Length: 626
Image (cartoon, rainbow, N blue to C red; front, top):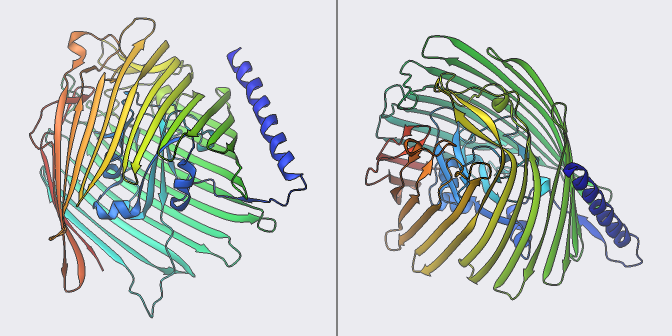
């Protein structure tokens, strides 16, 4: 019944939007319309954010270089309301706005989904930071055109478009990085941009090894990536990217279920192509993306049993967007088709076909912007899944902005939740083929005050109500299995502030105070602390160009299981990270040396399923560009 009501609402909104646009396009007015890219580029981002209900944070390449952020993980750690914890297995656990929920976060690369068939951890290690132009974080409820799911937010990583190099005037830019640190860390990478087939390209290779603090926590990673792009005189653009990632590592297990002999090897290859063109005589543009992923996991358990997983994906995505010539309205239309194949030793073969359609209409009335969006997803195993977003942004004054939005989304259980996880050893987790899909209503009301360009204060009230929330329960065999919680909610307030004091001093703070409840038992949701804080200070010593950064993180107590027993409580903790970067030159070559200390005071804490933190970690390295 709920799906039917949403469908009727969606059809009404679509008819309203199409009728309004048709009216604009068929008046005698000479006002025309043009199309804009569906993936927000850096030059259009500020225009999109202005008076718009969506809550968007962005870090662009200039800041990535200025702060010497060496990985995508480091980039995300600097963003307000975002926390990243490396996993013992594949990828990292990412939290937005204090959520302890592992699923429901949508990870995108150039607008195409990376995480639709994965759960819990996100493979950001496979994307070299040298290829990143910007990283954008959307807090929930997210725009429907980003993709299916995303109840906990979305992250879109945009890769660089390289210019064609002039061999007679410019050198091919090369970047070399090398670092070492505690627990036997050795890390190195090289990136080279050049001209191939009249297009700009970038090739990057990296290798990393770390022994780890605990027994059987060593890790080796290798990656190779390449991007190529070319623009024609007619305005069309071709882009091709390829990536390969190989990792071999130990799975030590939680403290009460040690697995000193469990190992995993993970390999993944990705190939993507994008074409952006113009519709008619400059009246529109569109972007067509085709992509494929091939991944393989070899999992050796503590008993010596070996299981394998093949997880493959093919997809097509079409995005278009139209903007009124005078900026009165925008419309974004998109469609996606994905084919997923999954084959595991324990659970057999499974297949999923996903079809998606989405549309979003934004309308500006002076200082007020309204947005209405809807999407329809259909999978062969979970059938029709609607989505909706709506909101208002009001620029009360030049400095005060009020945002209000609401959204509905459905999270379809991933293969990993249904059958067998790829992110942990088979000694620890299993799937549940009887899971129901999650249905989430989310709401957001915020006010932003901008003192100046780099002086802002934002206050946001948020709430999410979830039916059939997917959580994990541990059995007597110490194996975690996903289950559905019939009803739950999470609500709270987020405060974000940034202030540039001048003379090289910048401070930022993000605080989340929240309450979460399993509506059936009255217990708190797993890994959802009541208080989460992050504050940072950046200072540049102008005479020496020395950059100093310090970050303090606090996470309140939380429970790692749904029963909330005293033995399941993880204590609150505070960590301090510091980083010093010193630029200089060697025979005209730009060089940066850095020293980074994570968890400066060696705080001891557990972060997930009984895994303790590694304690103080020291890294030192150099970066050369020539």
